[in-house]
Image 1 (cartoon, rainbow, N blue to C red):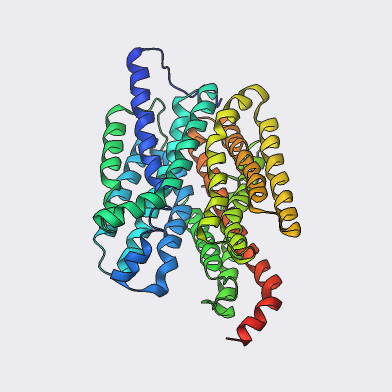
Image 2: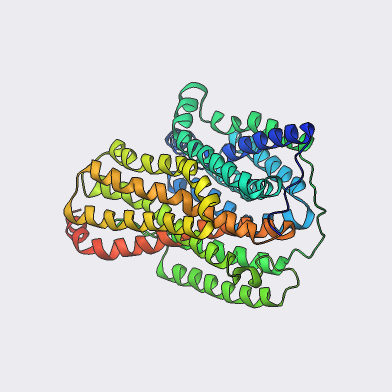
Length: 443
């Protein structure tokens, strides 16, 4: 029963502990969210000191890759050995990797330690959401998820500004050192105040399945990172692309066969095919395509097709994030009043309407204020849809599987975004090839 897993919170001490735990989880969620964007404004300075411009993209890509690949493993570990051990280990790894990244002397070292940071972040985000599912009832969970959604969005938006401030005042290494005080406080409070009310079960971690899933995801994400945009030189020859595609397909097929026979699969087929969880995972996958596709290509459209600058591109995309972060205010009561399905349909409908409007804006060359209004609908749709997918999945299982379904939702959203960026990139190249050819010929 997914509704009965929250521990009793009737005593004053229990309520106080829960408030401490919630605040600590908010701190570490801010860390993981902000770290995705905080380095963007610091990278020119980092490149100037460490050099290695040709490896620029890997500083962000390796973080996303490690974070995505590790999510299913953390979900299984949280169910098998307990949430507390796993989230503390993830926070510890994240903070240790932050120190190492700050001490980097070469670009190769920075990329390696950013990968370790990603491995830590891969455990922070899904396990924090799992703990929220454990300690709050469904009614409370809807409201707190909306609040955490606002914090997540605000931290991601604040990342670039904070990065610029730290670089200009304390130097680029402070971008990584700033994680330590917040991480230390979050670690200490969770170690002190968080007490699990269910007994973990020691199970087989399905290492073959985890390895195959990691191989498939790595191949997909590396393949996507190698796709060129707008006629830029392609770093991956076609032979490498074909090999990566073959690895991705082969590992996926083998993974499905292993999971069907595993005693404790990392991604149980019974959950993927569940009448509630399956559609939620598909919805998360499509949501990832929509969000990361919008975040990647709308700025390109504003700058390349409409002649705007970086400020114009940011002015179009930032309201989407703000709308998503604030939409939890109305999404939480809607979930309680309407249920998961109707709220998800509302969010999905707003998203589809927004993307249809985006096509109309491109065809009619609509002014920027119209484009902003159309994209605001997408932000307002992302909030109810993502909240419904997560809460529906968590409510369909008990404590012993909540870690798997929570990490599964995060995992499918990230993979969807990566695949969507790649497919849209290939479509962009095909459509833009004829127009770019004269520019290439002119040098």
